[in-house]
Image (cartoon, rainbow, N blue to C red; front, side, top):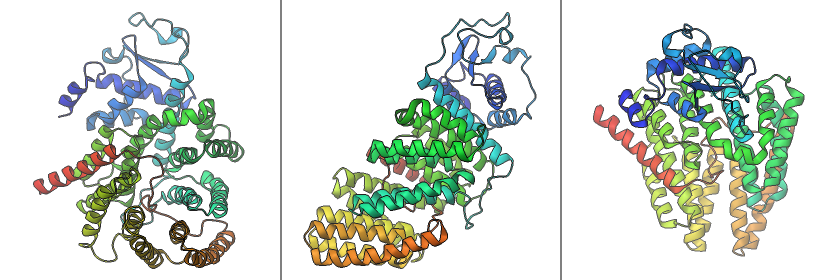
Length: 493
């Protein structure tokens, strides 16, 4: 099956398995010494993105050989005939004498442009950092039902997104206060990063920049300087920032797809090395979905990962059905953002129908998010009475699930208060505003006493809005993919 796919993609004719293993072996050794790498086979430069795509699609046996080579446990075949045509060297105007032989000829080349070199170097640094953290036991996978080791990044990212929601709803002072808290907490995250920390950092810069470029630039400046103060110069995060600062915010946007694919590929290889259905597996799959819907992750990688996780048992059928509903939620929200309210309402009702077949206490976050959707749909499509009723339902379920002073409830209050002001229901808006402010004081007091966020967020699907622009076509193909995978699972059972 893999051979047929390689032939279809035109990979096998150009890169042999032994050659790929040798390139990754040399690349890892050079990255450990702080050296950037360009690879050549038979004198032809191999594009880094093409090499990564080969890796994504490699057969299991080849994938294992690559991982062993990177860990230094694969036998060095560099003198064999099959890999003698592989040369890895530092980009330079001409090849070093010790990296050439009589069988290989490489013409002089100019230094690669910064915009091409930076993402490749970042991928190498992340590659070694992730492998090292998992192999040394710093990061552990949580079993199903246990607290996930990734909750730090999810919590921090959630509060950044919530700060932007408060600002959009007119609670500017509180929104910037929350954003300031996020900046303060970045230091704690930096000192004890989990496996999604750098991805959350990268994504945060893009989220803030989508609202205002100055906010994005301010965060990049703050995070890079704080990293240089807190961590030693040779730490991977300082190495990453030194590259990112060369291209700035524009480079972050341009390189996001390649960085995320490389990051999640490495993360997924460690997750999928265990045949267990874990909390982390489902969370990781959700992050893959988010990034593909945003256009930052290829559909080929998403489909390959999800199919492997479902067929291999890393994601149970029940978990896959839940992820399908989450994909439908994103579809409804994407349609709503493009004023396709009829499609958004139809899809939301499909999610509600599915939730009605589940136990009442299951999937509380999804239940709350569908209440958010119905409020926003009625706000745009229905009468004022329908929208106010939907807003009341949203506040009721938010308080029941999260409590009166939870950030989810506070943001829901700000949204309903803002709507009341828009339609001229000033008396109701003023009363809700007073309630919001008294609850906000409690929230801030809790944060100050803990010197931390009042509530920890341990799921990536907690937040109910789209942080970055998502494309309806990408979301729809994600929904279709899950429906196909579930059908295949049913047919094979």
